Each structure stands twice: as structure tokens, then as C-alpha cells.
Amino acid sequence: MTNRLTGLSRRSFLRTGAAFGAASGLIGLKAPALAQEGLPDIQATLDSISVLNYVREDYRKLYDMTDDPLWDPAKDWIRTVDWEKIRSEFAGTTVRFAIGAADQESAVEGLKPFEALSGIKVELVPIPDDSIYDKAISEFISGNASFDALQFFSAWLGDFAAPGFLAPLDDYAAKWALPLDDFYDTYRLNYGYFGGKLVGIPFDCDIQMVHLRKSIMEPILGGPIDLSKSVPTFDELIRISAEANKLVKDNGVAGIGLLGARGFWSTYTWEHIAAQAGMMLFDDQWNPTLNSDAGMRGMDTLLALSKNAIEGVAGAGWGENRAAWLGGQVASNISWQDSGTQAMRPDQSQIVGDFVTIFSPRFDGGRFSPPNIAGSTSVVTATSQNPEGAFLMLAFLTTSSIMAMNEANANGVAPGYRSVLANERLRAVSQPMPVWAASLDHAWCAPRLPGMFEMEQALGNEINRAITGQISGKEALDNGQAAWKAIMEKNGFKDGGGPVAYADVAPGLFVGTGRPLPF
Image (cartoon, rainbow, N blue to C red):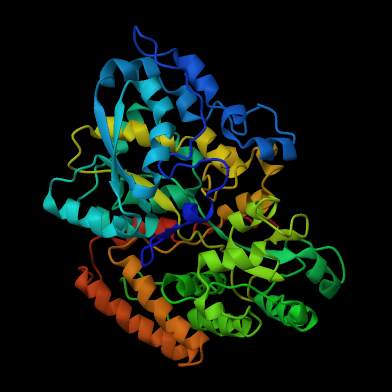
């Protein structure tokens, strides 16, 4: 995830002893050297894409990991696709891939196995990390983008797809048997489709979750934490975070960590809570419904929780929240799933063994709908000179084995595949995974509309003012709603219509309808 305002990415925080490439997450693989007479052996190259060669040695030792796969080889695209056919059609061609400039060098190494397997040469187009959105938009508008493929923050998908800047991928996905059915519905629908067409392949697949410190919360709760029953409601989370605040504040530990900074950070926290009250952001005529009863219930709860939050919560984005959680400064936390995985790693965390990730609390009369918020997707440009080759490169970078090993490395790039999240070997090194996987069949997501990121920024500025006591929660939602209407009108939403039909978006907004609860 990248904060467009600061250029600060999740990867910037997570640079450790093991190199990590923004483009692929595949650094450290030891692909066979190219043979003089041609491309290397396909199976030998595939065999090199392994736990032994990719997962950090200290993590392998910590968890006694063998070279057994952390994925299902039968669902791993790079192990099922016909590389000989790919070579016959594309060897000798070139793909230009836009990435953040800071990751250019590491991405060169990470893409070597793809070049060895396919015979396709990848040229990287570095873009300054703090201007990826603006640079991409300007190149798209020029009609002659200098790159064939791009990975970016998924909230921007509508901005790029609605004007026709992205190539449709349905035919390529069918031809090369991309396992779209292995993606959880929320990622496939929200990171992949726009206007009924496949335009992206999910890359970093996030979900927000709730994490508790056992040593602090179990005495308050009166025993071991049950993943769904100990904190069934947000009223209970308010209570226990207030109790924790009283007990441990003298030791520099606050009751709860929240993302309350200006912009989309505050919006994400409100969306997480309000979604459980049944909040939807729009009606079926694309009218914003932020200040609905459910929206207000979420706002009131957020403001109540903020009274128990860590000092400086109004300035807390992802980085500040992560540091406080892993540093043991909060007794509970609302953040992403990686806050659980990273909390297991001694080199990143001071709370190893003293936390648990639970099912998100609910509201009486509400629903269980943990939010799929943020993440990133991978696209091919409509002006690409080699769109099919670019698709193949993105399919390689997002394949399940690579994504599984990203999770084992706790680098914050999350897999969205059912087969990966079901792997018991991977679950042993990612504590949140059973709850995470069970939650995804009930996920809530904001639609990827043109202007959606701008809208979430505007609303978050107002929510932040409420957190700091400048305005009421109702004023924040009323102001946000007015801003949303203006932004939507600017982006072509009028009289119930817009750049994308509500019916095309609706299936991905909440995927839990009719499904039994996982607890």
C-alpha cells in the first residue's frame, strides 16, 4: 500500500536483510544461468522457485520450514501453463514494466526467472515513488504510455479503467488458463473487473482485522481469548480497550491502536467499523449514503474507541500504527492482516507469542463484513505494444507460489488465493491466516470508481476533524457526503448513471450474502 501524499510504501518500512522487489517479490531466486545455445531448462527454472531459495533463512530456521511447497502446485499458474508454447510465441519480444524507482534494481533480479522461462525481455520503466499516480495518468492521457504494464494501489483502478486506459484481459486469461476461480471473490471482483471486463490481476490482497494482546486482554476478559465469542461486539471492544487503558497507561501502553490520520487512513477505520453495522457507501442510483444510520453508528463507535486510543492517534497512518503495535505500545489494534504475521517475527516484533487475531466484532442487528481495504492490482495498458506478453509477465508475478512465499517472508504483500490461505504449512508461519481465510467469504469493499481515492481522502479529512474534536461525527459525514457528490458529478455520475453501472459493481461490495458465518 502506498500513501500517494507522501510516497511512503509498505515496502519502504519492510526493507530487511532479505531483498524484496516491488514488482515481483521474487528477489533471491537462483534461476539457472542462460545456456549459450538458448533458454535454460524449464523444469530446472521452476524448481528454483522454491521455499529454500526464496524464504529468508532465519524464518526457515525459526519455523523449521522444509522445501515442501506452501501452495498447491496444481493451482500454481507457473507450474501449469505451457512454457514451451509461450516461448514459441513470445521469445525475443520485450515488455516494458513501470515500477517505483526505488525498487528498480531489485526488480531486475526478481524478473530473471520469468525471462528464463518465457524468453521475454523485461525493461523496467522507473517512476518516482511519490508520483506514480500522476505520472501514470499523464502518460495515459498522452495516448502513448511508455510502459506496457503497471502495478498500483487498487483504489485507483476506476481512474485508469473508466477512460479506457487499460487493456481487456479476458481473452488472455482464457487462453492461458489463469486460475481466476482460485482468487477469493472480493479480490477477483474488485481488483480485477471494471464494467464487466477483466482489466487487472490482483496483486497485494489486504483485509483489515482486529488483534489483541493476550497478556493484557485475557485478565480483563477472564480467560483465554475465543476468536469469535470473547469480543463479539464493538461495545465490548470499547469496554475492554477502556479497561486496558486504565491498567497499562502508566507503562506507556494504550488501550487500542487506530488509524486516525487525515485522508484515507481515517476513512478506512470508519469503513471497517460502519460496514459491520450494515453500511453501504451508495444506493443503487449512485447516491452517497455516508450519513445513514449505519454510517452514524460506525462514526459514534470510532469516536468512542478513539478516547481509548494511543496518544497521537489523529496523526496515525499505517506506518505509525504498525510501529506502535509491533513495539508493544497498544493492547489491541485495528489494522491489516500483516500486523499479525509480522508480530510473529522476532526481528520485527516485541510481542511475539503475546497476541491473537480475532474475528472482527459486530453490532447487534448488523452483519459480519470484514473490509477488504487497500491492496494493489496489476494491469496492461491499452496502448501496449506487447499486451499478451505483458499479461504473461503479470500472471507470473502474481502466481500463487510467489505470493505464498511473500507471506512466509512477512513482507506485507498478501496472497488472495484460496489454495494458498488453506495451506497448513503456511498457516503455521502466519497466525492470522485461519481467521483471515474464513473472513474473506464475507468481505466488504468500497467500489473502485473514478475519483474513489479522492473521495476517501476528502472524507478522511473530515473524520480526522471529528477525532480531534473540531466538528461532530454527524458534521464529518455530512461534509464528506457533500464532497463526494461534487467529486462524483465531476467524474460523470449523474441522474443515477455514471462511468460504470451499479449492477456491474454490486456483486463485489459485500460477498457474504447467503453464506453461513464461519463461527
